[in-house]
Length: 457
Image 1 (spheres, rainbow, N blue to C red):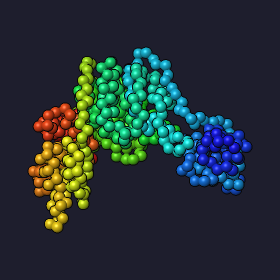
Image 2: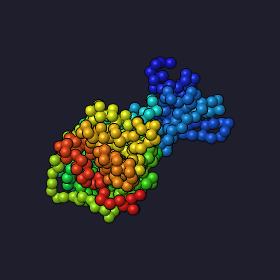
Image 3: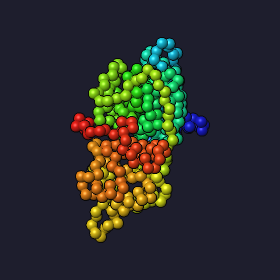
Image 4: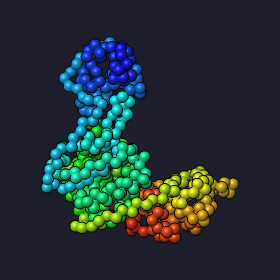
């Protein structure tokens, strides 16, 4: 047996490789498996075995997109079936663009929407080009023209930070100023709400929409959600009467509609559900159904302007931190951040914005109040948000809250912790130190609601 065949089969055991080779079956070939003892049969595409798969297991991809492992035993009967799939590359498509259609630009950064299973490792890997995502969406080109498709990064969203936000903002501004109807950003979902907040502040006053979207499931799964998400985001960018940064993702688990979330009020709230993204403290701006019909909610939104230009302000202060307070949490973490030269810290407090403040007398070193006072005396901004996410913090309801304020903490209304973190880095880089507390409490991109809404929870 040559080494090349061992590689093509992955880590299958020698006796399985021998049986498959005799049959003429290689990874990608469709085979039929019949269990003569238990009287069942399956058809699927043979996959290479990964190092994470148990020994003596045969791996098949079914027509519904899911994979199955079958114990390779004497009662199995194998035969070739019609068909096969390529496992080494994504199919690609960038259909001929039609004239007279709304033009949008697409900026790709990676993420699950542009991914499939790597059959040699069993893990999800990213596609190389946006054209590989378009392969499954030919209907999109009947209503939209992509005037520019640019692959900026191939990064998971957890690896995207301020330098990438700066590049995204500059490219989005260039496209909007170069007559695109709107911009679509394909992005990983885990930290998409950080990027949507960053673009909301960096792009300032928009006259057209910027729509971020992604996928919770990879493109080779039967439950792939990225198709509807990308189609809906493209329709929003092309046609919606909107001039904001938004996140467009499944509104429900069904494929009936996508929600249009304001970029500073949205958060990923589930690890894997297709409707993981939720607007917090406000309803979504609206929904776009599978036919492209938009229903707006009765809340204020910025609408398109016939003319305008975008002047991005992309300066960002990276010396910031986001930390969580909890029972027993050590305030030394705040002292450490100050000593490391951080210029601002956002704290996720409990409830209305509490931190451990008045512990028993023999545990006074657990109080965060001296650490907050030391930080603010050193000129470090301390912003307070809530772990509850819903609702708003308040500095006056309880004694501990009042003392945190007296120590210098600024309670940031109903701003989400992640949005506050991003806003702080942007404000520190764009305003003088004495203006920072005022600007953090000023509603710049819809990040603060004037009044808590009963219907938003």
